[in-house]
Length: 431
Image (cartoon, rainbow, N blue to C red; front, side, top):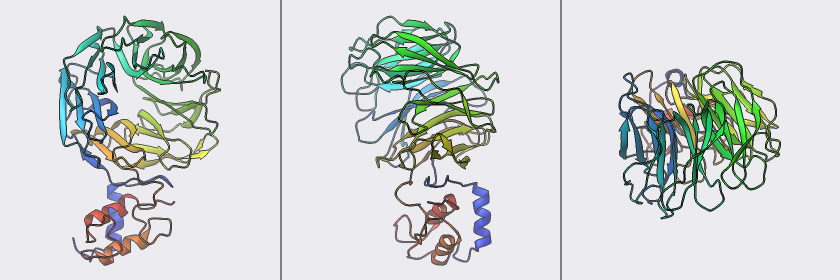
């Protein structure tokens, strides 16, 4: 490529790449990795090897299109820049669903627990250098789905919580603190496909929100001893779905825990917390989503308001919180088609939540894409500092291409394709 590239040609590249960012929320071009792994189902994050960089654990389905054969639990060690140079397969079987990371035996090293509809709930103890001990079974197959960890009995040790389709229950297994667990205790629930933990009634005790196969949510209050009591149910958009993702955050500015969720229909829903453990009636954030699969909540633009990101059949979509429980129209972040899972992890240690997305790349190899967050620190690609990435910035890159100049965004001494990709990816972003 030469500096003679025209603006029209560059604009065509923008359309080809499909790059977009939400107003005030900006990401660097994605770092693609783990292209040869089976399709991830859920993700968790921890520093498994104590190198100061965040790592991820993934539960995967089987390799496309032969799923579910060859499903595995994978730990990918981060390099602090969005990449994962070392990938470890911990356990391979026929089907996995949930994964969570916590220190279950109090040795200061993060461990991994995982669930599979055919294999029950298990865990593996970490040794602090990215290696793990043998698989230990907590409960055999009762069709467990999503999995979470939290200190449910306030003894300072994380416990395990999961949904069980077979039992129609939320299940809690209290940790003994030595790497073993007490017998699991079930609380009657619906057909639970996702679980999340938060203090829904502000009493200092973790509570559980479960997402159901019928695209609704159920709220269960904890008593501080590991027991749960059902208190509220919010119905979904009436579509019968096979998948569900939910997240908890502060969506309407009152600092009470709110819930956002999706099912494999067309709707992103939210219910705002009352502070008493119950939630408001369901509100539709977006009724025209193309097969949403997962949702995450984080304050991406550092404005004090939690934003929503969803994984959809077409890409990852960002909804910027505009205050009072309202959101700007979705803006898609082009990482892959058929996005399956999305999460907010700080992958480069800059204290900003980054966007980690997994999915299939146009029906081919599953991928993991890390979008490093550049929000709140200026817009990447806004070379002239006018608050937007526009044709003036694109012209600056093209006119300086191949030499030094102000358009050297990545600071490598030359204006090159790396700088052009930053401008193209964030083209149209407004502070």
